[in-house]
Length: 262
Image (tube, rainbow, N blue to C red; front, top):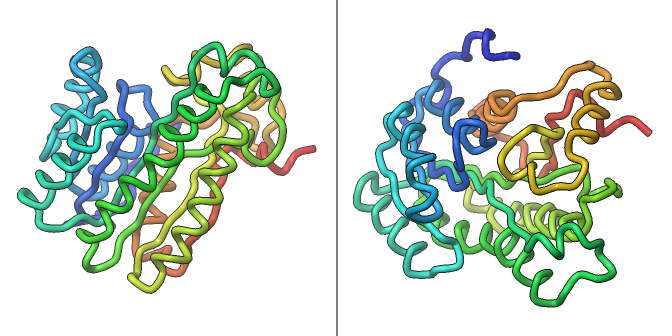
């Protein structure tokens, strides 16, 4: 789609980035990692478990990842290990991308009213609080400031049919980005929620009627086409660069303008 547009210059040269959430090369996290490396950054990538590893390995190889480590965000020892490895390898961190979300299928597809307490809590823990856990460990390594990114969706702000309990969860994530932006501003650390339009990723396949959402997005967006993961990655790269040094706490839509439409 937009891959033909040449990458911008090396505006992230020398930057070190941790990217959490690559499932394969169609992931939004892959788009971020690719855009960052195109612009001169070095990346550390994680994979959820041994089952996921073979799908993420080709991305790590393609992008010459400096670190490639297991990370299940529900395991504090794995979180600690990742940041210990970053400190040992780089001694610093500049960029963090959180691109993970989870809800049990029954809760995701069953509507908000019937969602279980356990399913809601698990969705909130993995999709929202894990961003705070990552940020807490990243901040001490961001000695010269830095940027944190979390992936949201318009269903956080307006009702998108079938998005169900992920709406309130993503709303909490967007709010968390604003409060982190406030807390971390004095350290020169900027925080953004990124809200892409529908993209056919592995995660999206869990949503009911996703193909309908995608077709609607393309037909209704002012720019009249879907977005791809590289679009999202390059937006993050711009926000991470000195060009956007006075931007923080925003929810930035990368959706062809779909969010402005009634």
